[in-house]
Amino acid sequence: PRQSILLYEGEYIPPDSLSGSYWLICGGTNGYNKCGLVEEVAQDNEVHPVRCCSDTQLPDFTHKFASCEAVAGRKVWGESEIGGVCYESKTYAEAVGICESVGSRLCTKEELLADCTSQTGCMYNYELVWSSTPVTTYD
Image 1: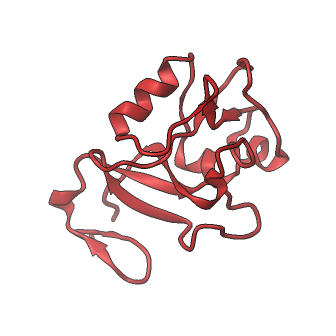
Image 2: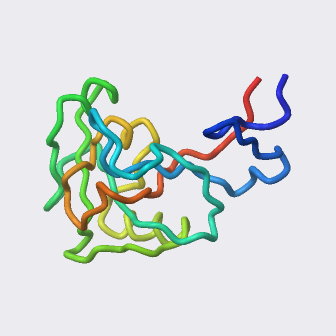
């Protein structure tokens, strides 16, 4: 088994530094990459933009793309302007709290890759945003 997780361009992260790490995903990935990287690893104390998801319709949350439902196997609604505010620089814990404050949650890596929050505002299609998916080693 590998002792590290493969990132992009052949770089590896040692397993002892994975604790508190989460995937960042480009806010707009449908058919093209707007961020330079599709995914990246971030420590939970770094600051990054926030997008939220919900399994039920919430005020201002939208369901725009069939790709989202196809990947998730269910409808997922997304939003970037939480309570009318764009949260560009938040830690992981702050991002979780922001989403929970409106009855939603951080999106999973898979939901973001399926563009469940694409085109929901704040110009975050061009930014790497927090996902709820922790980084783990693999065999």
